[in-house]
Amino acid sequence: MLRLFTGMEYRTLTREEERVIVNKGTETPFTGEYENNHRTGTYKCKRCGTSLYRSESKFDSGCGWPSFDDEIPGAVKRIPDVDGRRTEIQCAACGAHLGHVFLGEGFTSKDTRHCVNSIAMIFEADE
Image 1 (cartoon, helix red, strand yellow):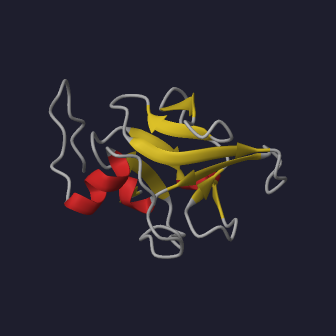
Image 2 (cartoon, rainbow, N blue to C red; image 1 turned 30 degrees about the vertical axis):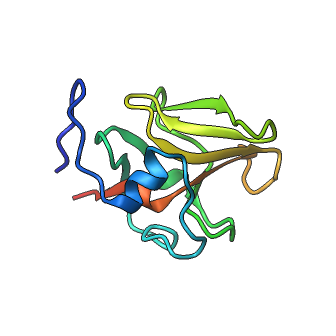
């Protein structure tokens, strides 16, 4: 069970985790731990432990990163990306960079794809 960190107390990150989560990097496509994860459970922020996505909202988009068509209410914030073309998604609790959200692609009935770096999450399986 992950402990939800409070205040400024965050999990210690590896250099690569920090590159993605803090410095807004991207992991190499098709290499992430959770791209092909089909277990039932909750995806949580690797930095602070906040629950972000349920496995029921995960789908295979073929993009090389885990894709979700819905977040846990209030868990993810959307911010216009500095490139002016995309929308960044961050953990609403700690501001960790998760990836980007895309609308209008038609993958699911919700017409939304959260493209998330596996390295930014920890998966907690249902018991």
